[in-house]
Length: 189
Image 1 (tube, rainbow, N blue to C red):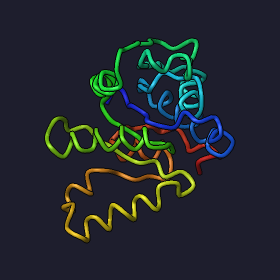
Image 2: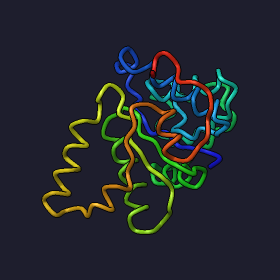
Image 3: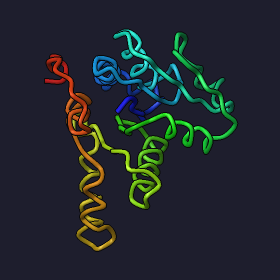
Image 4: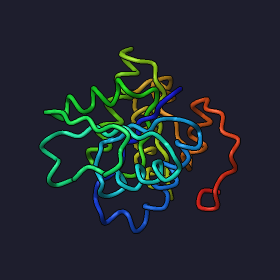
């Protein structure tokens, strides 16, 4: 694995509660020697995860649709910024650049992105790992619903098992098979 895509929220309101975790996620990815691929914005958790990776000396690739550049300006100092015309192009390019996918806390867009790449895994478009970083139990209710779907027969257990869950990014990277001997930081221990 050389790169990991992080999907997360762009809302500035979430930074107060989850910003430290997002910054540490970016730093963990950089410490593992991986390139961070993300949505390119400077706002919300997106800006925090990229800022954390850059501060730790990591490479960061942003992919941003032209239509969001005013509302969600790109983060200065990115290693690469790719501006595309549509959200579909954004997701396709992010997937092309990435060897795995992680969802940090976020809203409908975050869910749509992680569910799409998970579905691509299910139908054989790729075999890249996908996972939810369940910071402070953020995804507990969603994970319970996925289990409910499985119990009700709408999802086979092997498909449910394709999406991983971890309490922090460093643990998720280990689940993905990335070796990182750096100790867990105090914020994530």
